[in-house]
Length: 302
Image (cartoon, rainbow, N blue to C red; front, side, top):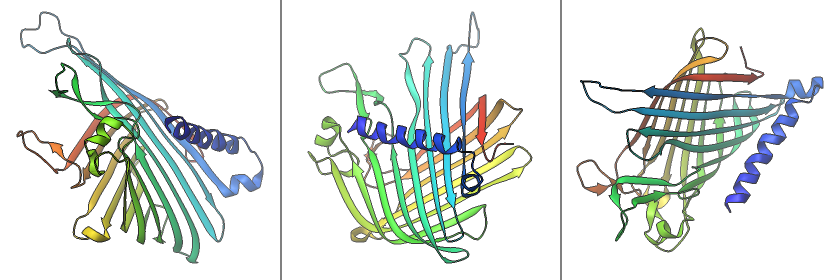
């Protein structure tokens, strides 16, 4: 299964790279594609430092790719966001600090100039094993395993309407959505992690969903992007799964970029080991501030 997913992602990247090499006028008019790749890093080194502290090295790689197709009657927007980071602090082992893989595909056909009949595919997972280093596996000194590739993974398929008044923002609303929670790791599956039934790999929910996207250059060389996803299952309609990603990218020069990112997740089926020692649903928060090397390419590069 891992290999199949990786192959599909590679096909997507290779396919859109091939498209970018097509120099025909028709393709250039119909397709808009490109992306951003970057490497952020930070380092703290201490020697005989009276104030205390510890050495730290952190490296994070990222890639944001898109390929959008548009004619007078239809549109097809595709994006692939990937990030992976590692950090080493003091004498601790190497640990990951960022790990995400998000693929979105939205196909729409005109109902009016600003309203589209739309099908949405939203897939999310991570690349690597994840641990809670404050806890240990039973009868072991190893850190507690809490996640893996495709454990969890979330696949949301929806049919609905997409309102797109301009190039900066759009809102998709679906009354017919199917959200799949996937946990392929046997250990986590047996625990019933992330809301699957113990011993099972997939939990399916039928419900309603919404997706709101806003992206705009708010100042010269400063881009703001925000994406909000909402899902509510019909059998638990008062409970809403919330996923939000917001990022500000600031271009220093052709190759140096600073970024600030904030991700929020709330899913009451995911049990969190809270800071106060209790276990239960809670808001998950991830924020990243980075400065590093970045390369922007494609039709939107400046």
